[in-house]
Length: 184
Image (cartoon, rainbow, N blue to C red; front, side, top):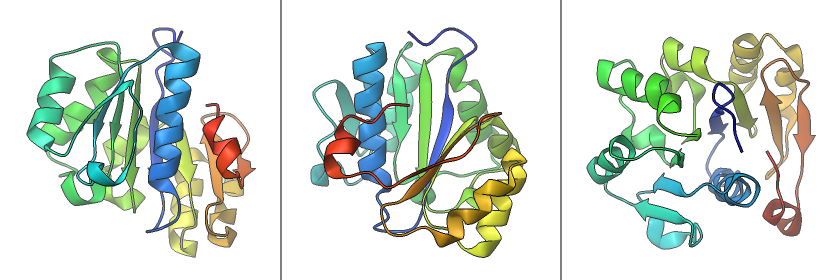
């Protein structure tokens, strides 16, 4: 069980076809298997993925936000946030920074960390980073005060760096089988 105060606020970040959604699905599966959490998922392309029977999935952002506001104790996953997140607005900032007080885990899936406001970036304590430009690799190193994140510009397709606050960076190149048994 995720203890109060230990709720992960995470980001899965990378370019198209890097493996972001596959990893987000694996995170949802791990949260179910290891912590018994149901997932509330926003995915505008939900017809393309199978999130699992433990996940309530909608392509409707208003319904997703209402479900998140009207429930508690779940894992919340917001896919394709690059298209739908209005970073820097009071509404988005309040949703992002307060979600851990209602739910056990929150993961945002995005193409670019700069889509998040500085306040949002400051709330992240888990990051799964796929290949990035040199500039964005430096940004990630700054967010976590960890220069090992600069290696993000050297990753291959489907490789990612896992970073938890105050922990070392771990580089992953999982097979499909390893992704099914992924642990946070």
